[in-house]
Image (cartoon, rainbow, N blue to C red; front, top):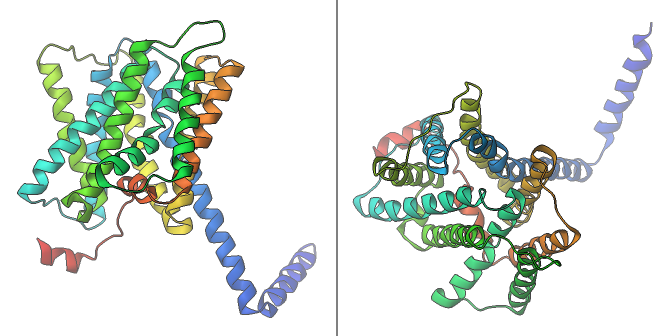
Amino acid sequence: MKLLPLLFCLYQYSEFAVSLPAQSIKKITIMNTKAKGYILGIIAATTYGMNPLFALPLYKAGMNPDSVLFFRYLFAILILGVMLKSRGRNFIVSGREVVTLIIMGLLMSVSSLSLFASYNYMNAGIASTLLFVYPIMVAVIMTVFFKEKLRLQTALCILGALCGIWLLYKNSNGSTLSLKGTILVFVSSLSYALYLVGVNQTRLKNVATLKITFYVLVFGLSLFSIRLLSGVPLILPDKWYLWGNLVALAVFPTAISFLCTTGAIKHIGSTPTAILGALEPVAAIIFGITVFGEKLTARDCVGLIMILVAVTFVIAGGKITTQLVRFRKLFPKIPKERNKKHI
């Protein structure tokens, strides 16, 4: 008998749903789609900000950046290879594309290596925020080398970001961030910006992004292999559970982040997805404070906010949004029948 009220309520709801006009049902569907897109965008940005969460314990265990990135790239290659195959794509690239992919792989590996090295000289949250100036660097590169018009909004945002960086670099007591660490982060950001521009301004713009990412990691791995062969020690984790950190670096900031970004772009579009990318350094800051006991002053917080706001307005300007999100956007699965024709 207790089921009767519940069944009655369900009946009433079904009657209400049937009586809704088609336009109202369409609005509800759109709202649900957007909500799903924003959730996916938040997950994508948060998982991408997990780099320090899994890397810092490995450093504490005695591993160096080259060893950490060697295993991260290796495991990520295996994961992306499976993803490529499951989505019905082949691994074929032309000779000219290989040359460009080698350059892009070196840029990506330099960006990864300099960022992970900077964690040894400054708080991971601050390093991740300084890295987030790469959209501004993309805007500057596109203006200087590709003659895109520099908008007043972009110019003001660049000025705001520089003020935020100055607040972070020099504290009120006169102390400064590590110069070496700061240079490493900006090398990482510049390499990343050049990678984004390069992918979108070369013949690679017509290649599936998942395939680009796979080969970028393959050729990027060669840099770490050469460094390890030339004398940099390859340090293995001394505890079994630290292997989980290495796998997590390949899974969360790479595979899950890429997949969720694709879903977010599909449901809410490129610009909102790119803006949600501001949560990446926020996630790194939260992990740094809660997990690793890092501390931020009021001046640091003001600087961080200024950088995040400036970069968000640059992305919202729309012109470079495609540049920023394309490298993480995965193309729809190709039917096997069509794929076989290209093999």
